[in-house]
Each structure stands twice: as structure tokens, then as C-alpha cells.
Image 1 (cartoon, rainbow, N blue to C red):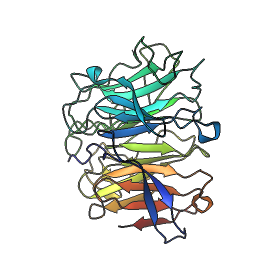
Image 2 (tube, helix red, strand yellow):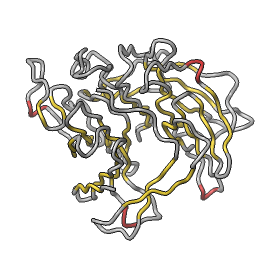
Image 3 (tube, helix red, strand yellow):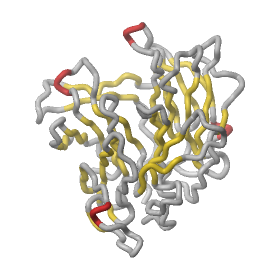
Length: 335
């Protein structure tokens, strides 16, 4: 079942009003026009309001990366010639900067996309220009991995994040279709339905390492920047959405798909591991509350002290907010 399409045309961020455990988390509009299908936001490590910088890079699904300087837009690069879009879930999927990026000695940023024309999953490195950090290096990009064969157009997963260990992590969907027809998620030899890790400094083509298995369509996920724990929003089949927790330093986890959808059995076969080997979700919710989880973030900012340590996610279809207190209690907010 296809349940993810492009993002809306407005960039929003979560803000807090009169916070208590049962109060409402709201949205504030930052950019209301000038975007088409924004899919990800990347902020360079050296960009911060504290040093007078407001540079925000916004990746659009069509391949255009736009730069918002706090007032106006400019275009960094149009990657549409190399990107394949053969369905509503394909295109430019994610963008992130090197944690060592400073615009001079390190100018690297990384993109994750479906390759033109076959839709295979691809990770490439680009650089900003040496003389202008708001422009692209004319040398172009370098594909880092052998593109991952992706048989169908849906369930691409699609999020890049650097870990505190310096490695680049990415999520892949199960290859598409309903019920993982290729049985990829539980196949440790397949790169689909996985959390993968690559060393961006290794010899090219870089061979991804399988870290964890058993994912269906982990569209958005994040590291807690204080602890290194990972929170993975995994879009469900037709009954349950799930948010998975991965403790920092762990590996070899099995998140259950397609033996389980959420906490419920889905397709138990002889190849399914013992139930004690499954890492079940931290939180699940039924399709009546939402049909496509968008994994969120643990708040580590300083402006809203009452929100410190809370994890916040949402659902693409309903806009419900799902938040977890530092003590482990989950709350669902409607409206």
C-alpha cells in the first residue's frame, strides 16, 4: 500500500504554548511560498543564528535544492537530470551536510535519490563552491555507492543522517509493493528494508554495511544529538504505524517487518525469527489515527526548556502529533 507522497508546500516547525503534559504543541509558518514539494531540510554545521547565519537548504522532491537566507530564496543546484521520478514516492529523498562542513576546508554535502531512469537508490557527494558557499562546485557530484536495485516505485525509505561516530547512516524501504513481495526486509543479504551505514571516506564504490533489518518504509528518522539514540518512523501496511527506538551503540536489531506490523503478526513463516529476537516498536498507533508516520526529533534546543528531551513526531495524513516524555510516556495530540 502506497502511503507517502510529497511534503506540503509550507515549511513548518514545532513550537510550544503553555507547556504541560496535556497542553498543545503548535505549528508556526516560516516559509509560505516559493517551494514545490519540499522533502528535507539541511542546515550546515557552521550556520547558526548565533554567528549571524540563517542559511537553510531545502531539498525539493523534483531535485532542486533551494537556499533560504531568512528573507529570500536562491537556487543551489538542480539535480533533476540525474534523478528519476517514476511514481509519487520517488525523487530526491534526503540531503545532509558533513559534520565537518565549514565551507572552506570541508565543503561536502550528501544527497540520497532515485536514479534516472531506473529508480535505483543512490547516495552521492557534492560540494559547495570554494569561493561561494551559496553556490555549487562546478566539478559536480560523485556517486558513492553502487546504486541499490529498487524493483518498484514505492517504499524507498529515504533519510540520511550522520552518527556521532562519523559514519553516514541511511534507511531503505523494502522494495515496494504490498506485504514485501520480495521478502527483502528479513533477508540479511538484501540492502532493502534496512538501516545501513557507510564510511564516506572509503574507496569508491563504497559498500554499505547492514546495521539493522526488518523495516518497511522508514521514510524519516533521526539521531538524538545528545545521546546518539535513533528514532525511526516506519510507515505501516494497512493497520499499524510504528516508531522504533534504537539504543546508541546497538546493532543487529530486527524491527520485525514483514513478520510483524507494529506489535501484530503479519506474515509468520519458517524464516521469521523467534519473537524474543524482535525489537518491537516504542510506539504504535492504528490507521484510524494516521496512515503514514513521519518520524521526528528529540528536542535539544534551549528556547523551550519544558520541552527538553521530548520526542515529537507526526503523521502525514492526519497531522496528529505523537510525543514522548523523557520518562517514556507517550501522548497523542489531535487537531
